[in-house]
Length: 354
Image (cartoon, rainbow, N blue to C red; front, side, top):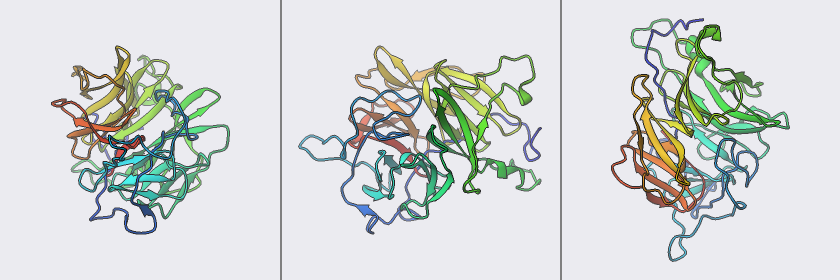
């Protein structure tokens, strides 16, 4: 059924990358919840030391500190100015140049569109939200057991200009989408953000409303690594068996389409560009392209990569991309005008807080 509140619009997607605003509602890093020295570890989605479905394998087990910089000093690299945060699969999250103890394992942390809440998978495998200082935890969904949940993302939509139908229809976009793996089957699920303890429902992408036309339908399983973007309730996600990135638009009608070969997609804040990972000559490179139907040109942002760049995230202004490397976190201009620069030795999942 068509939504009451939308008019026909091009697909635009938002990124749920997070960022930190210390002067606004950022965590108090001088309080008991923060420590001066960061910790780093491989960010497991189900258990420390394991990889999220769709993520590159990570050798070794998680450590309690990031790789030291030359001279043995760790580099945090997060600040109120750059909005970067890093979750490591441990209890601590790097924020504002310090670390905040959330009191539970924090895996695959993502930020709400307003930056006031964090969503993550906790040590029990449940989907949880919390304040930026780790307080106010709410269990949105309890893992029933036998499933691995990973990479939550905050779906979001705003009313089109001139639409006076009210906000009822928009409420369905107050949703978190995440990946679930059970018995080797990958799929996307979603839960409302305002109903703690809800039972997740499966997200079933189709090529068009109802999936009953003659177009080829996208895979219903093998889907993982969802990332919401834009302001019209859309997400990008990866299909692991096909090594394909899809975009799912649910603003006017449910519709999914293939976009590129690769994995681990992330959408720019305006929803108009996509960054994703693709293997080239033995290393994982970062590629970007437009999300427009008629623009298919791709750009390799890391053509000279001598290491792997994975798990990308966009800055709130859309000008910078952060990515994980075996040595920590690097950033680079989103237009590819400069080579990546390492900003942190903490090994974890980068995210930007709005």
